[in-house]
Image (cartoon, rainbow over all chains, first blue to last red; front, side):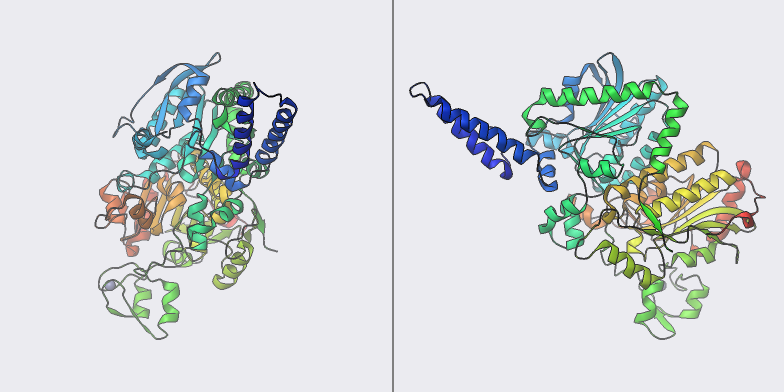
Length: 317
Length: 293
Ligand SMILES: [Zn+2]
């Protein structure tokens, strides 16, 4: 049974009504009425999903049925070989890494992986990486550079894990190191936010030539709930915080933080894994084609240039 | 990101003046009553227990640089509230109030100066400006002085004091982490030294970017240094935090800080490092060429 979010209830109710009528329609001819309802359903979907508030997008980004990074990898890549461990401390299950062939191109794929049920949530630490996750990612990205393969990262994290061990093992240093190295690796780096893009935890695998966001995802410096708790001193203002943070793909296009938006199936990626993965794959391959036409030095200069421009500031007269 | 948290255990050069309108002040660590003039002369290090009081960015510039050598750049850069952010008050108002209250334009001073006659590029953060948080202005100013260090082949020093990335600029603040780290990558490729000094407190997005990327990372005794703030860690794990958790000594023990330096030895230590690192730098660069702006 699919999970229905609060704002999706009218759609679910209508869907239920239609399917009830369809089961009866063998006996009575109600097709004109049924057609009308189906049309209404389509309009309602269009109306609701094209006018989502930032908070509703956050909810879709966190939808329990939303495809996880491995669902994309499974549908996008062939011959995926997962590689484990950071060679320093351990293997972090919140970050998956390995190589796979997408269409005709070999990629190093690094992703953040959330679970789907209690057991896998715990196994994946709810998608919250520890330092060894970032260091595994770094090791594999350096490997990609050595062998001249492009890098694809799939971002989906509620944040880097704020644990005691994570602090002891240098969470901040691990993320910082990735930012520095990713800004200069001499292979194309394409990053896609497929769910949640929470702060430094997301950025730790999110620096590259292109950053794309799926339609119903969020990316910001802090989660709306935490922002609410700090600035409003209450958890109650998460919806306001979600709007204030300008965390949607549309907002971030305007601020030149991202390079493109990937369309999702109507109702969200959770409604159609195949179509969602197809859209991501097409967008990634299109970007790769452009990047591969650039001489490496030019690509690296453009990467620095892109980050140099980030932000908005003024001069006091 | 915990810069609204009241840190009662650390009093600062800034606030204690108002609370104790006389010539004496009390050390919050050992309780010793200190004559303010003596404390100032001792660089705000307790004469009895060596507790390091928080000090302004300007004070660090005085401690570190040769007198009258500081050439600030981008002095008038200010935040523009790109998100039109409002919480309990407007970010634009928060900026105005903070500017008039602190006399600062944002949370970092950047420019050029000399340490025992050697030219350097430097950025010093001030925790007093919205918790030393990094928004577009802090990121851009640090990037520009890093560009300057690269252009003039100078060693680069950052003194950090920050609660992290500034929430009111959303993802744009986050991007400053990537931007400043990318600039440091360029310095690294050019063989130019970057020395990071961590002061109390250095947390969040600042720690997770330039602050942790020094060729050498120095810390002041007792400074709080971490990714997540201690309160967040405690809430997330439900565990009691170990003794001395996230203090400079804890980081030294875990291998994330090269050296803990008493403020009174800071300048000489920096000077010593600069000698070791001088190979690719231009030690004769004349900082008077710089147009202070
Ligand atoms: Zn004392």
